[in-house]
Figure 1 (tube, rainbow, N blue to C red):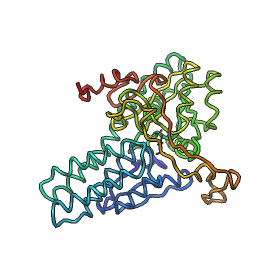
Figure 2: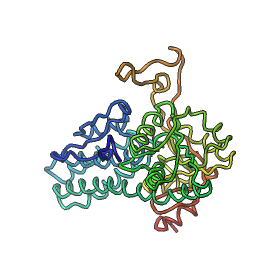
Figure 3: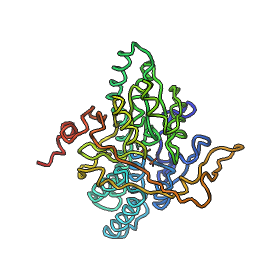
Figure 4: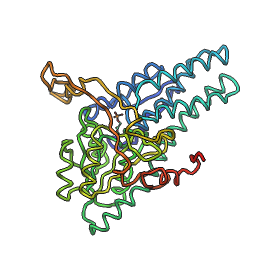
Length: 372
Ligand code: MRU
C-alpha cells in the first residue's frame, strides 16, 4: 500500500544487503515514519515482543525472516550444530507472543523446509526462499480476501442505491498487520478502488490504540473516508442504523469458527447480533488453528504490561510522549485479546472464499485439512 504516495510493504530485505531485514517501526506511527534494520534473531524477537511489528500476518512474516537470520548466523561446521542453533532461535521467536498462531505456523514451516537442505549453504538458501514465500503468500492471500470480501460491500451498496456503505472495524487488521492489503481492510480498499461509496468507523482500540493510530493512518493514506470513535460508541451507532457491516481481523481462528481478535471484538459481535448487523472475520488460512476446537477455552490470551492501560501516549509539541492516566496507585489488568464464539460470526472471509463460521463451512473450503 502507499505511504505518502510511495508503495511499501511492511517488511522486506534491504536491497543492497540481504543480511538485513527492514520493517516500519509501528510504535511511532502515525506521527513518525521510521524504518528499522533487524540483523539478529534477538532484534527480530524484540521487534515482535515490543510490537515494532504486530498483527498476525506480519508477526508470521517477521518470524519467517527471523528464521532466515537465524540460519545466516548459525554455526556452519556441522549440520547438527547448525540445526540445533536454528531450532533454539525458532523456539525463542515462538515464545515472544502467544495468541497469533501465524507465529508458530511460520517458524514450523521454516523448520520443516530448512531440514530438507543438503548442506548448510543449501539450508540457508531454503530459509531465504521460504521467508520470501511466506511474505509473498501473505500479500497475495490478503489481495484475494479483498476480491471475495468486496462482494459483500457491493451487495449492500446496491441495496442502498449507491448511498455510502458504513463499515465498522476494530483494532488494525490493515496492511500494517500483514505484508500488504490487510485482511479486514482488503475488501474496504477493493471497494474504494472500484468507486463504491464507503465510510469506515474506526474503533480507537484501547489500550494501544491500533485503530486510532494505525487503521486511521493507513485509511487516510489511501484516501478512504473514515471516522475514529471511542471503543464504546459502536453499540450506539448500530442501534441507530449507522453501521451496515462489521469486518474484523483475527489472530487465531479455530477450525470450528471461534475468532480470537483484539480485546473488545466480542462486545462488538454481541452488539452486531442484537442489531441484526452482519459480522465478518477476514483472515488468511495461516491464521486458522487446525488443532483447536474450543476457542474460548483453549486459545491462549496474551496479558501485557499493565502500564499500557495506566498510560496513554501521543504527540505533544512535536514529540511522542506518554502520560499517566490512572491514579498512581491503581492496579490495572491488560488482556490483549478475546474470543468471539462462532455463533456470533456471520461468516469468515478467506483467500479461498467466504464460508460459514463452522467446522463444516471451513473444511468445505479446505477439504485437504479433513482428518477422516
Ligand atoms: O496486538 P496486535 O496489534 O498484534 O494485535 C493484532 C491486531 O491488530 C488485531 O487483533 C487484528 O485485528 C488481527 S491481526 C491481523
